[in-house]
Image (cartoon, rainbow, N blue to C red):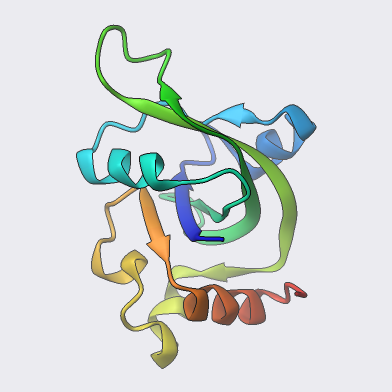
Length: 139
C-alpha cells in the first residue's frame, strides 16, 4: 500500500462532505497540475491518503481510501486530466496542523513542507505513522 496526501479547500469540498458521500465515494476532480496528475495516476485501489483542509484550517482532518484508480476527469472537457475515486475511512481525532508538522523533526522532509502548493502528494510510510500518531489515529 502507498500513502498520499490530498488537499481540498473546505469551502469547496470538506471532510464532512466526503464522509456524507458514503461508501460510493467521490471523484477527486479539478486537479490541474502535471505532478499532481502523475501522483493520481500512481495511486492503486486500497491506497490511503490524508485528507487535508487547505487555505482554511490547514489541517490533516481525515483518511480516505482509493476505491477506483485513475480515469478521465469529467470536468476537464477534452483535456487529458484524471481523477481517482475516494471514500472516507476515518476522521483524524485530533487534526494535525501544518504548524505541528513543520515543528516535528521527523517530518522535515515531508512533501507538504517542501512542495506546499502541490495538491496531491506522496507520503512515506514513516511520515504516515508519525502523522497518525500525532493525530491519535490507531493502527
